[in-house]
Image (tube, rainbow, N blue to C red; front, side):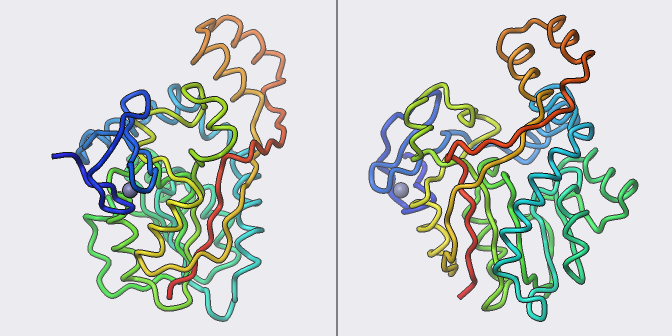
Length: 281
Ligand SMILES: [Zn+2]
């Protein structure tokens, strides 16, 4: 039997593209894969951050933090400092967001499955981060006032179970912040198979502004902001995508990297990344 849609429960699907399927009821798009924890850990080993998905994640810290600053600025519009004191980031990677967030919260914590990233968070940055899958960790009676999933939900095998679990550790009024690609955006529809965010098996779930809202509603969250967000990108990242991932001309990548141009960054909004803020009912 087909896997039920995590958004609406329907088992009626149609092929989408590249091993993806689309729910006939709600249009949610997802990969027809069931990856184990071990398989996911293997995908997110050190090479994912250094040489596969990213050329060098730590070297890109300035640009990554520019992006996290934008997200924090937006989130701050909805924060009540007397109410929102404890933050949890799910999928915190190398901790660059938590590092910024700790100036605004009494307590910031993170969780990630990346061994190298978690070691960097704890040993280099002194952050309170654990290496685990949220579904496997015992959170006891801990409560969180703000929970963030930055570009993470699309990577999870069972995002609905994450939302269900974390919802139980958030009191009424707590905030949830999520960024993810929008498969229903004009850019995604125009680019089709060439949309840059279409890549299973790292991206397994493809939400739209509507499907994320339905899933959040089912987990007792009211969406209070649902908008497109832009991002900074380093030229190094652009050259890496162009000369290593796409055209495989490493000498050209080395050449432009030697010019130092890679350190420059620019802001881009393609109106295909959604930034959702929701409040626990
Ligand atoms: Zn559905």
